[in-house]
Every structure is written in C-alpha cells, then in structure tokens.
Length: 505
Ligand code: IDC
Image (tube, rainbow, N blue to C red):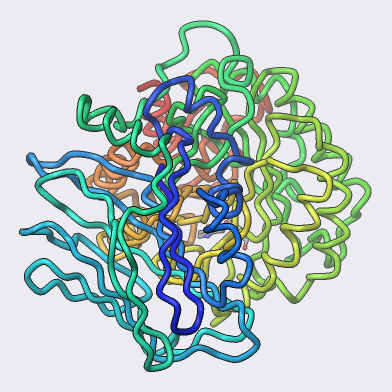
C-alpha cells in the first residue's frame, strides 16, 4: 500500500508525499505483517520524510491522505482503489473544497464515492456532494474511487482548494526511498498485488490452519494474509433450540465442510435475552457453544440477534454489558467473532446503527484488540451500499452484514453487495437461506445458484440459517429428525442438502 499525504497551511503551498511500505498482498512475508494493527496504522503511522516536512507538518491545518491499498488487472488495464481522507485540524469548518489530480491519459473511473468526480482530459476533479460540502472543525471526510489506467498510477501532484483559496500540491518531493523501491518492484511484476486465496484444508482443524482472522481491504484473511472464506451454519435461536448447541452436532457439521458456527441469541421476542429469557442460562449456553467450537477448531460467532427489537439502541445498555462480558471471556480465543446487531429494521437508519456500533466496538476492543466484529446494516441487513458511503472509521477488523433469502432477495440485493464491495466495504453473509424471507415458502434454486456465484466470485463468507428440525423450509434438518448431533446426509432437509453440496466445494 502507498500513502500519499498532502499538508496544507494557509497560503503556503506544501506537499508531503510520503510512502509507507506495508505489503498489500505483494509478498507473503509482507502479508503476514499486514495485521489488524497495520491496517489501523495505515493513516496514523506516517512518518514525515524530512525534517523540513516534520516542522511544517506540525502546523498543518488540513491534511489530505490518499491511500492506494488495492490494485489488480482487468482486460489489460491497471485498476486501483484510492481512499482519501481530508482532515480539518482547524477550529472552524472548511467549506467548498475541491481536489484536482493529474491522471494518465485514458484514465477511466470504475466507481467513486462521497464526492462528485469528473475526468476531463488528464485531470480528475473531485468536488463535494450535498452532505460533505463542509468539513467540520476538528473533523474529517472520507472519499474514494476506483480508477482504470493503462499504466500503474501513483498520484504525485495536484491542487486542493478549501474556502475559496487554491493550494498547489507539488510533486513527489517527499517520496521515501522505500516507496521508490516498491514502485520499481511493481514495474517488474505488475501482478504482484494479486490476492492469494487460502487453499482448501486437507488436514488439521480450520482454526489450527488459519488462526486469527482479520479484515484486509474488502476481504477476510487468515493468519498468513490469505483470503479466507467462512462456510458456516447458524443455529436457530438458542433461546428456543438449546439442544443443538453441543459438540457432537458441530462436529458432524464440520465433517461436511463447515468451518464456523453462528450462535444466534435472540435479544427480544419470546424468551429473548432482554425480554424474559434467563441471561445467565443463555450466557452459559453460549459458552457451551463457544467451547465446543474451540475444542473442534471451528470459528464461532456470538450473535446478538436483534429482530423484533428493530433498533439496536432499544437494548443498547444491555448490549454494552453483554459485550463487555463476552469480550473479556473470549479475549484470548482466536476463533471468536462478535456480531453486534443481527438485523436492524423497521426504518432504523444507518446513522443510528453506526452510532450504536461506535459505542459497542470500543467496549469489545478494550478486551479483545483484534477479533472480527460484524455490524448489521439497515433493512434486515440488506443496505450494505448505504453503509459503504459512510463507513466506520478509525477501527480495524470490522465487517458489514448482508443477508439474503434467495426466493425473496435477488439482483436487487446482489447489486447492493456488488456496489458496497466496489466502494471498498468488507461484506459478510452472516445469515442466508434459499427459501423466502419468512424462513419458509418455496426454494428458488436458480436464484440460490446466482447467490453462490457471487459468493464464490468475491470469496464471501456465508452462514446457512438454521440448525433445527423446526417444520419450516429454512431448517437444515428434516422435521422427522429428532437427534441433536451425529447427523448423516439423510437427516438433512432439501435446504440442508443444498447447503451440504456448497460446503463440500
Ligand atoms: C425466523 C425463524 C422462525 C422464527 C422467527 C422469529 O426462522 O422460525 O419464528 O425467526 O421471529 C431473518 C432473521 C431470523 C429469521 C429468518 C426467517 O434473522 O431470525 O428466523 N430471517 O424469517 N432475517 C431474514 C429472515
């Protein structure tokens, strides 16, 4: 990844172009270093390239950081994603900003966000959209774009305008030796940044082989920095189907290729954690589930399953206490993942969910510095495109939920997932099935296959709803199957049988 940092002070025209070499899929060794902490460091660990820069940087009023952390080749074009942050370090709002960057001839924008983008000739102009015309005092705005060019491209000069004043951005003066070295490597091996996907396990448990997971760009990666796909099963509400939370059940699922279990604990509804259920018993049951996963080397999601409590802030205080407790309990477990709000719905906006997440995430982080945290999105975890326009910043290992039920959710939701991914949002399908959104109704195999194509194209992690024999289409077991572990193929329903085929691939 390369970081280009531009510093602006009043009428002094100043550019600090600084490179920070951390790898971005270049070399395996570098990938290993690209841990959550590194990701966090992307925008903070930038060292001034010279004493002169350092002196000037200390009195910066605005700081514009442009990071290119993902690049690939498509039809002979070099495609790269650039993420920008403009920080306002003054005590008054900055307004009417404008960025112009020289770009190579023929450059084409694939997608862009949080700005109005136009390429004319060899100049890219970025101006605000309605909601980010003003950069609040002490605040920041983020923007980004994916651009195709015929040659690998590193922005080295340009102009930033804030508050009606023009500031020229000089070119390349602060390039560190490290960055030059990286550029040379890129020229020699233009494919070096292609993603490496973890190979299918042939022995050992998933956790033994892949260790602590983290989020890198839009992907979940394993301890070796290789793109990793969770193939999981979600329990039904453990409040109602506690008997399936056992090692024998999970072990037989693992035998079919499952590497993760989602422990769904309803918060509201009848016997929910916050609505009449017994919190101690539910916590003990979760613990049984997590321990079973740990013993089997499976990943485990602790799912705060909001549903009829449409808005996660309804039980926010309980959520705070709960996540404080569980993150302390599982701080040393490499296999535990936290899902902080299953499906916000009923008109709950992304702003509300984001504000909730921004309260819960630091509570988890106090105990567990690097576990994956899944954040639900509005409309029953469908609006990942909206979350993509206003992502949670300053945190690492955050991934956003998209859920589907293939008979109901089709191209409309797949397009949201594609849009979100194009905008750089890491997405996880933490719940899905192939029937209707009711959890019942008919199966749509054509749509299910289309979903699976998308899942495989993006190496998305997915979790099949639900491990029970309840008489509804989404149950993975036949209603007649009364055992709660040691499942064989014949025990699975039509839905279950379809998922078994996917898990085994
Ligand atoms: C459904 C169960 C059903 C239960 C109901 C309770 O399948 O047996 O009676 O919840 O409200 C979701 C939810 C998930 C739903 C599922 C199917 O996350 O809790 O489970 N679904 O409706 N989102 C979309 C579909």
